Length: 283
Image (cartoon, rainbow, N blue to C red; front, side, top):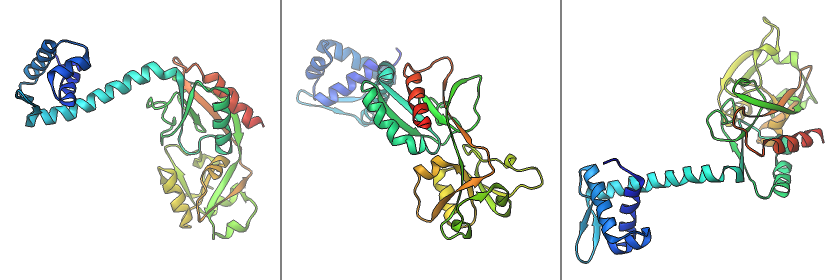
């Protein structure tokens, strides 16, 4: 006999209600069916799960272990069902670092007002696709390259590049920083999700580089004064960190902000999200 969810639900119902009779009422089956289902579970697992007397039902040592796993499996199954049946009543937008930057709060407010039946979730995942490739979101805000064969996209706006530095750095007194001056410093780059690469400079004129993998580490290292960083303006809007300041970067091309989604499985609200975010960037 194969293990089925009904076996686990039966075991949990017996323990939670305290009797086979009450478990049968809760499950909407006969008491005999509860006994058969429990017997089938014990036969499948090859262990006795319950001590049963005329007054009580208690789990055996094996039963305690199985019960804990059963609750976890049933919770996962319920989550799977909930995701499958409510997918169109919520929209998950992933991002690696800074969501929509200065537009994030307004996007959330306007979405709630214009689409009250679709709950919005913003999910930060430190992956190149903001969690889209991993199945963690329906759309993702990206500022780097992606697999165009797998994902469709729409450009929604552009952002200036900024130089991040320690607050007590001599450059912090400047109003802006030329791209060429970065060659004098050690540049901190996130190779997984960052928008900065050495290709911004001609070969032979590139700065020394260190690497990191997370926004918090990136900010902490920059605050120490050891490195500087280049980033979209959205990072400065989204992350206020004591000890770090941002200055506009001169002579560098802006960064295109895109929404991407699974090419063959778009969320029904995809185009509404694209239109709203593009409108905010235009504004």
